Image (cartoon, rainbow over all chains, first blue to last red; front, side, top):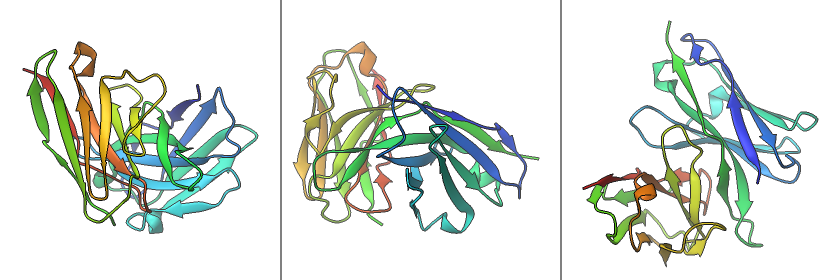
Length: 122
Length: 107
């Protein structure tokens, strides 16, 4: 069973860039789409963006101007950068693997990491 | 964006109860809905995909139904391990969106 683990600083200053990495184990990063999702304290889930192992990306329009994803297949990792952060970006950040439910091309978020809390504060 | 409206937001129930959670989509999404269980500090666990297909290893007391705009997750007999927060997720189109969540509490 694939396992995902988020890592990165738990505290980021306002206006700086939040950087997180997701390490994939017990499975290859090749051949799958990989997403970042976040959940502010006491609020709902928000999908941020996804990346394919080739590096192609799709972003949520609400965050597109500040988000950048990258992938390192040699390390079985993919990463998130969110620039110009504010307190509103304080959240638990999750990484997840997409899973195909059939041959239609529709994929759901099938395997998740346990999440990491990032607080934006000076 | 497709809005997913989930109800109720909180549900109080006892072990053995039958529990139903509903998600309504703002437009038709065929059967492209997944349901997941979330517990603090743990990796979320997907229970149902494609509206009604049971994820491997998930107990059969969990079931899903619906298509188009209305979907339900049912727990046929609530167990102690089932007290958690549940979310629906639409994957019909980007951006992927989620319901607001339903917290199942001990009555």
